[in-house]
Length: 515
Image (cartoon, rainbow, N blue to C red; front, side):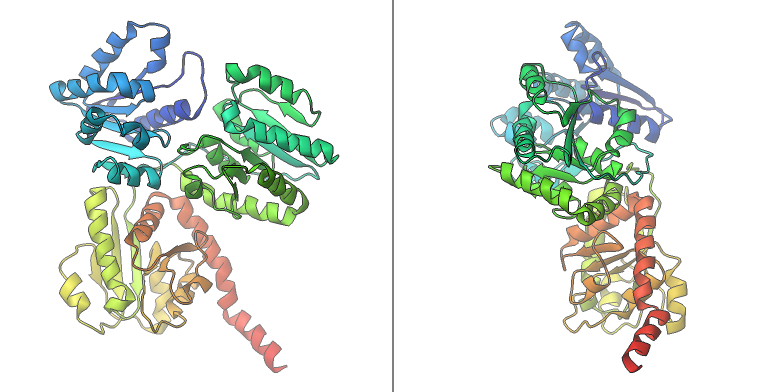
């Protein structure tokens, strides 16, 4: 796409330097558009201008009419009152609208808005943050133009180990009661009553919501182990959070999409304790990258998890390590991705997953419109006719390469980006190809079948997918395709795990057995 006029329209908050999930995502999308489409004319309109100059709506309409592509990030009122006008203009001036949704509220919001729902059905795309919202918009609102856009942050930050005897808790978000301030002060009461102020500290960062200002400021004055650090600028966030041990986010907003403070915590190398809001399980791996506590009546659970981390530093350090892997899910997306080169090595028959691979390929071609490209080279003996009848000459990205001699396997597969092994064979034993993939330092996409999990640690050296669930495989392929850093990280984990299957390790075990 060249020589197009692209307008990003949303709540940037530049007038007052407002920093929250809406403004930060809007600014990041604008930056991403500029980087991805350098040969086009990119402009923006900050809808915060309406608060200071009502006539600026005419400026906005003039800019909208002149664009070829509209990147739209509205808040509630903008969607309710301004979107209908923008939609009509898109029909007159023939520009495309791509709606990037912030938060998880849209499906519920549209239930009693049939006209808005109809208009949204007829825009180019609705790009959401969560699987749940995508599913709800499709099933409840009958929208067919919805996809999940990668949640990302611009960052170039490497966390440094930072440990003290005191557990350093941090809250970073809008300072508003509904973000769970009451539960945090309940935690503070516990710390004080149990004389643990020398063991646990709490620091707040964020812009104070004016109606809650007196409540917040009077509350923090009660405790000498609580401090308020003001608002952090975007370039200060990660190096600041890196000085803490755990992020607290006991939000009472049930329909939160993705709270960006969680992403910032992962980037900074610290785990999260958060309530089980609607989409919590999509972004927090419970007991791995943090803890999910009950959304209702979870005050005691918050206290228990904080005390657990204060007492168990081995667990805390393990969670910190896990966030360094998790943060790769939020690296910068790109539609200018390299072709992902996958390899399949096994008997070529349907129960080894050839049927699954066909369904995966069809779905990716349908959903991603060549934005995700991958190839699979197949090695192995054909033991049924499935490959010849269903794959050969049908898919340009699937190629049969013959049979590999055992001493050639590791050398050959080392030239690929990942191994794919979607077996659902009832008689599967110990798949030797998984051990050879570890030796070749390859990430692996495999079915969670039989003994595969002994060799593949999910999201560490590869992905374990529910057998026959093509969405799991597609998510893995997309993640590896868009994220070279993730591929490198998984390769390192494969290298480490391969030591458990090396000749030297086997020799040591044999010596122990027969000594």
